[in-house]
Length: 115
Ligand code: FES
Image (cartoon, rainbow, N blue to C red; front, side, top):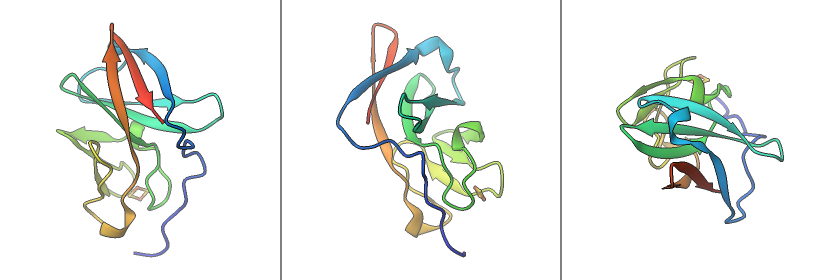
């Protein structure tokens, strides 16, 4: 497998709720990159109206997962096909590379992520 890459743009865990956008901005079955003020990033996904967030970083070579294809609740990295569960960050390809997931809520049409 080789060495896993470290995500330099992973948000700091602060227990802070951040409003990231309107629900219409992420269509079902798609991902979107959310850039936070401190320069960190998360990947936000709409799984049939349910919003989920994980690191925007494939630990294999660092490709942004928000730009990758989604199959149900699985995102498959566009670069070399590593697969992750967008609900909890589990990596199905390489068990040692579990990535972080973030709680998401929707209030009045706004998507909020807890980092
Ligand atoms: S960068 Fe290689 S599978 Fe994601």
